[in-house]
Structure formats: structure tokens, C-alpha cells
Length: 195
Image 1 (cartoon, rainbow, N blue to C red):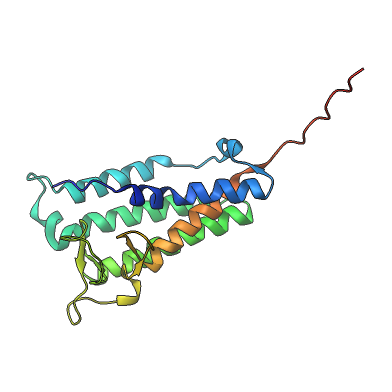
Image 2 (tube, rainbow, N blue to C red; image 1 turned 180 degrees about the vertical axis):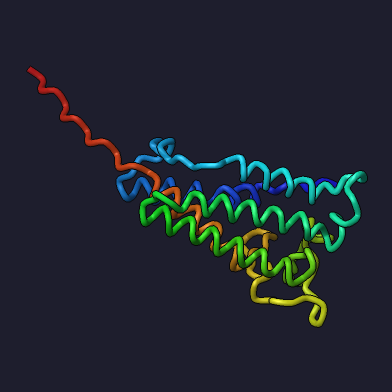
């Protein structure tokens, strides 16, 4: 069964870019000049994304050792690759870009800790009105799950989306990185005099 994201979910996922564009413009920065952001070793993130997709798809040919605990081994491989990519990209950044990358690393670590402590599952608040729960998630059960405070327990108003402290750090870090990477707008040239 494939979950189809709602419009609210798509907007929430795109929120770092949307907020960065608005805030960046208010700060006199040009969102179109984001192309100057050069990230190294992007293949590490593509590999992490491929492993994450494999974890969620869980094809029949996948060995049982990789399926155990909701694919915790695959999740760990994803975290290691993503952390390595972030580490490689910290060097040579402006303080704002570095702050954004460190927040992303902290958010990823918080989510990884919650998932690892719960044997491959990210618990979410049982008050969520999500039928069956999202893939890789399970409704919080006292005594069965750990680290409630790092789980998906904060509701996004007006949606059925639950987020964790780690998710907020990820979103905030991406937003800060994008804003810091925007270059100032070039000065406008004066209008020619009309004779």
C-alpha cells in the first residue's frame, strides 16, 4: 500500500524552501542566487536516499537480517551516510551555513536516537487521527516505546501531521542553510534620465 501525501504534507515538507525565500527576500537576499551553494559528495545523499527507499519498499528478495526491527540496519546505514555527508559539507562554510548544517545534523541524530531506541520504529502520539499510521511509525504505547519526548508528538495545526523535535531541527536547519546561502541582491542601477 503506497501512501499518497496530502497537500498539507507537501506544503509542510516544502516549508523550509518557502520560508527561506520569504525571509531571504526580506533580508535583501536573492533566492535565485541559491545556485551558488555548492554541496560536496552529493552521491552520499543519493546513496542514503536509495537505502531509505529500499527500507520502506522492503522487497521480497531483501534478506531477513535487513528486514528485522523494521529495517533498523538499513536505517542505520542511511544515518551514517547522511551524517558523513553533513560532516564533509561543514568545512569551508559561512557561519550561517555551518549553523544550518549543524542543526540538520542534530535533528537527524535526535530522530535516529528515537528510532534506534524503539527498534526501527518512530512512535507517534496516539491522538493523531492517522489511520494505520505512516510507514515506519507506530502509535505510542507506554512500556513498549522509549524516548517519548523525541517521538512524533507535536501536531502541525490544521493537518494530521505529527512531528518530532528532530523534525523541527531538520526543518529549521535547512531553512537557515538556504537563507545563509542566498547572496545579497545586486544593487539596482539608477534609471536613465529622460531628456
